[in-house]
Image (tube, rainbow, N blue to C red; front, side, top):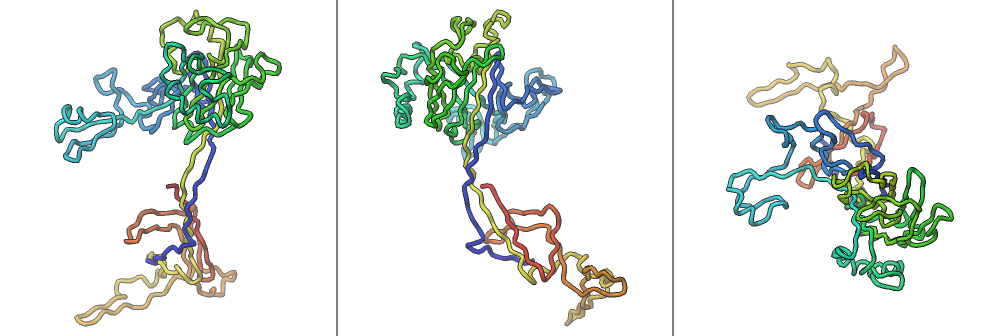
Length: 397
């Protein structure tokens, strides 16, 4: 087997920055991600095994049935650890639980049904701990716009009602891309308000419909790195009164994404009497992901790699059991003829012999010659002594 060492110009490490797009549609307390419907399976009402409107982190437990004899516990795949002196444990267990709830040799289990979705919360005068926690972050962003200031002539976030929408890391990457956030507010299918980060500074400016109440006004801000939207726009978008909680109100940006995991559709009120069902909401944005990639160039030069240990490399007439003879002081192997697979356009002419191989795999080894990776070609690559190739291998780290 031929082993070649990568030169310094054969390996490159780069960071690829991409901007995946996300879309959330909220209506009647249901959240739809990227226009995907809620799919039921043969065993579950939601095939991924997580709540509707949530994205599954691992997507392992797909449509799992209930355990035998149980109507509550499903036969799910799960991680496990055996308690030992190493004190390995899951993050969901406390140090106290590790010492008191499990015996040495006992199996500790976790869960793969980890999920996440957007979350909405209306911050009023009675619950402001989350806004207070964001005070330094908001003031840090004020270099982009004065609308971020915790307290200014544009508003006092210590007393304002604020519609807080949180986007988890799995649904945005490292940060939200500037200028990509767009919010649309619909009533009975008609657009009555649209916000956009049109200045690329985090200000959510009402850009539509044309001539609507509040056009050109800033209704909130976006915290790009934290994945948080704060909406403070309190003007009426429509004259119709809807049954929003805690009180009936006309449509405002304070009620955008109403029903998005905010416990307003948990059975505490009847859907039939809820006139807010005519309101629906659309949120679109692009996240940012950074992926380190290693690019390697593997070279097959002229007259290199033109021999194979595959038995088919030798002519069939040369394969025999008597080709090797041994004695007490000698070992003799008859020379073998390599199969000539070079094509000739004439039936009565033997083609000029060329060593020919087909490259189908490339092995990657560490410095100790341990195989750590294998790259495969889509189809075998024919190589003669007159050919040379460079294979580009890319690995996401």
